[in-house]
Image (cartoon, rainbow over all chains, first blue to last red):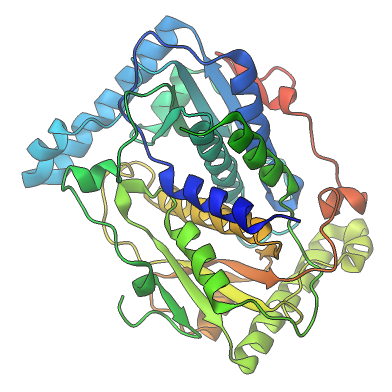
Length: 213
Length: 213
């Protein structure tokens, strides 16, 4: 039985979690800390218990550099597509790949043919399972006073090639993890006036689609 | 700064979370409890701050019945595809739609054109954001001592039609939430000997794909 205080603690943690892009360089994460964070990730739900998440811990400097290059290539392409906002976009810090203490790549495993709960939405439900594991990892990072950033700015085929992933495996996230100078008070995209979040009440409704949408 | 005790509390919560299918009938969830759970969901990360989650709270009995029917139709189809395991599958309890205190449908909003962080994986990253919100909701339910089950056994087009969702919106989850007789000690699919989870170490490796896979 969890107490009201346990509830308050969890809500505080959920609100304090941030997508971090600024990290303390030359720092480290103790192996036992990373281990228990990964245990929390692995305790996530998965459709049909397929556990489609795979975690690649990147320690080789040449791989870190290759990943940074794949991300930077995509950053340039994103700026082109953004047109008049492209210059403002290029001023944003979007990742901390070279500075973060630990770099993980999370990939969706090749489909194992699980039917339970995913006959109609096979790829979607496997992806959602991986995302649940990553969200657990994010909360675990925060409660360990470590920052985490989910970088999704990459060409998945290029990243899969750089990491020599097997056929059917799809990289979903490059995760930068480690000590940070400070946690942002609000999402960095809000602090940088890139975009504001919407209030919850606009996204919830009873029995029908929200009329505010 | 979170303490070691805060960490232990979060890890306990993550491990205690279960995908529930058994609920106490005729129960209720207080509105303020549901509100703070949804606030936790809404504090999830989202790619480019697009917050693509929409929560439909289902209170109309006819809609609850319609949703149960859509899920049951898919349950029968799943049993057919499972072949020789179909009969064993049909004995499993896969949802608590008619008994749970609160029924929510979570949908992916029509694409708003966000490019940031999703130029190469637009649908995948929006889906992952919705899943992160659902995982927060799941942990919030558990810390409130309420069960939650994610039902993904439905034809999304049939469910969208039953709920009159706008073009481009995709239902991702039917969530059963409410008091439960007891939380399962392990994933129900393990307790029912349907499938066993794998140990974490098989799914983690350094610089390359796990060799155990």
